[in-house]
Every structure is written in C-alpha cells, then in structure tokens.
Image (cartoon, one colour):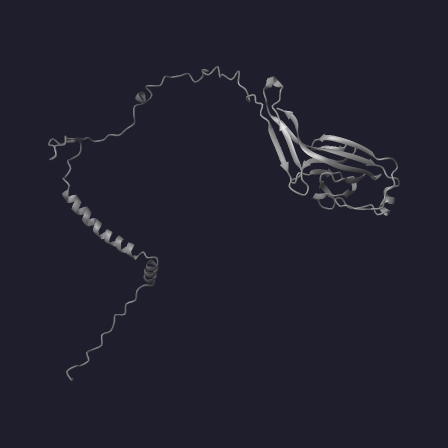
Length: 298
C-alpha cells in the first residue's frame, strides 16, 4: 500500500458573495420569485434571437413616396397601394360649411314660454309628523298638513315652528328679599330647593298661553322672566333665564351657564318657579305640551 500517497491539499478560493446579493437571493426565495426571475432571464436572452430571425424573413420595403405593387399575392388577393400620409389642418370653410352666420347683438329668444308656469302643482295630499321621545317621559306629536286653499288653490311653501302651551302663575310674597333669604329660600339657578312656606300678599294670578312661538318673552316684554327658545334634543322646552332672576325652584336641567344657569331644559308638566326682581316676585311656569304649528305660507 505504499503506492497510495497523499497528494497536495487543494485550497478553496477565497470568494465571498456580496451581502446585498445574498439578501436579495434569500428574500426572493422566501417570496417564491426565483422561477419568475429565471423565466425573465430566459426571455431577455431569447427575444433578440426571435426578432432577428423574423426580420430576415421580411421582404425589403421600397423607397420614399408612393409604391405600387403590381403583382398579386400567391393566394390571388387584389393588389394594394401604399400612399404617403400628409396630415394637416382641415379647411375651416369645409368644417363650418353647414353653419350659418348669426348676429351676436340680436335678441333671438324673445318668448320663453313661462307665462303660465306654476311653482307647484295643486295637491290634496296630507302629511303626518309623529315624534316619540321614548319611554319615561313620552311625548307623541301628530300634525296634519294640507295644501293651502288660498292663492287660487296653488300650494306654496309651508313654514312650521315648535310652539308650547303653558300656564303662568304669579305670586307676590310679603316682606323684603332679605327676610326671605333669612328663611332659607335663596339658591343658585337651575336647582330644586325647598324652603319655608312663603306668605303671599295676594291671591296668585294664573294666565294660560297657547301656541307660544320660540323667542317669546314670558310672561311679557315688560317683565321678561324667561324667553322660550324652542325644543331641546330630547324634545323638551328650553328657556333663556333673565339676569334678574335670583333663584329657580323645580325640576329642570341646566344646559348652559357657568356661575348661574342661563339656559334651562324643563320637562313637560313639571312646574318650575322663578324668583324675579327686587321684590322677589315668583313666576311658576307649567308647560303642558309642545307641538308643531303652521306659522305661514310662502
């Protein structure tokens, strides 16, 4: 076995693949894109050979200008002529030949045909609006709207607003405001307060108001204790409280105000009392209902 001698050791070439090529290879292998890359390389190599073989089979074309092929093809097709294209602008006389000139300063449309036009057609349809505020304090309002009979039976725009019916009771207590504060009657606006009974100077005066529209001062312009502003998101009346109101008694919710409540939300059929003015006159509002009413026609 002496004839088996160990040959010289072969060293591997010190060749390192660039890092970005290795990352690219592994990334494409994970995404399974290597077959597509191989197909693209084959296509890039094969396309020049295919194009070269195709161009050799074509017949050389003629020179510039029109070329007429006299002989027909082997299949007997009719001969054709290649003509040089000369694109350009079309003559405006030909383009506008079907048009007739008009005077731009002459009025052509004198009768528009709108003499007997109507805004809306007469109709006798009825519209019903139903609003349900849910359980707890349920308020269901139904209104019917008909086309106005005036203006020759032609209906127009109908305007609506949320109106309230309420009763206002005025009570004038005896004694000054300081005496009533000592009895524990003073409170901040927007809260319910129970104090000692107040002795009245006279019998309370009750006034019933119907269809009170928004932005109406109550009980009147001379004594603007609170201003009705319309319904809230829950459908309850909103009252803008006067700055001369000292305190408020009753079930209510303050919607806006910092130190003192300025905008109150009052539930239906819950009385609320305002102490107003230097004489501490009490005005009790009790809203019975809120509904849509017709305020006018357009």
